Amino acid sequence: MSAAARSPFPEPVAVFVGQGPYVSALHHANGEVQWRYDMPAAKRIVGGLEKASGAVLARADFSGGPWIAVGEVDGRQLWTWEWEGPEIRPYVGEAADRLFFQTGSDLAVLDSTTGRLARTYKELDGAKPVSEHKVLLNTLPAGGVEAWSATDGKRLWSVPDAFAPRVFGDTVVMVKSAPEEKSSGTLAVDTRTGTQRWLYRDLFSPSPGTVPVVVGEGAPLILRADVEGVGLVRVDVRTGHRGPVRLLPERALLNVFHADSTVYAHCADRFPDVAGQADRGPESRLYAFPISAMT
Image (cartoon, rainbow, N blue to C red; front, side, top):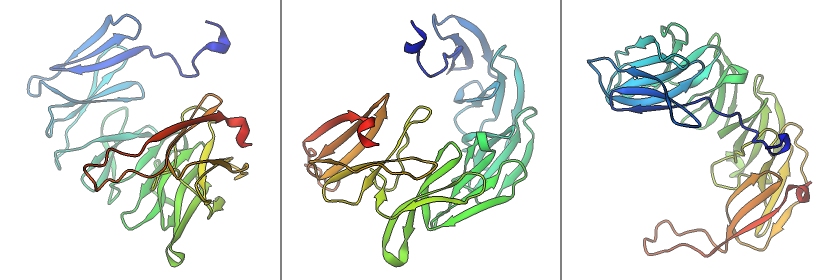
């Protein structure tokens, strides 16, 4: 395969599998077992499996068992974390050499090397780590987005009346509502400082309540324009520069995504009737056009 035809994603070294009482590392190409870890006798079932830097995190049992860190290279047990609290403690991510676990309405922070509890964030039940910027993004139940330092636990910034934050490099894009005007739009801020980069009141997420996430470095942000029918606009995430409106002869935009140099828009003449059980959905169509047509 030529260099130009190679996948932009790194080739995996191993595939990690949790089955029964074992955690195994399999070679990605031939399935050969590279190592196998035997769960402790008291908790013989793998109830969850997550990947962190340098380790595989295995949850023993399905209800209240400890989290066990296993070295990804040799399968050696690194540490075990027992939590005296709610049974469900899902792993939510890592940042600044810390691992984050949800514990009820709080967020437990573990040292990734020792597995010791470093701190607990109170009432951060929706926080997500942004590893490359060492911050935590949290959406408040009443509306609002805030960022916390993953290093020292200080609050860095907050944006009221906002939700659905998504990170694009050093920029956070979110839905920004204006309750007094009964309207909403799209806001972009600096990930570390919360400084506003741009705000558009006439551009929205293609899907209600979300900001589109597209895979691949430098992938475009596509937003829906406030026009009759379906109109799509490409926006430069960092500068806010917007291209022309791409109009499609439809009434409803179901989804939009991007692959290579092409944008795909899934459209229909109406949205599905979620309340009508007999509704088999509208007839839909898929449009494809080059991303260059949106600049």
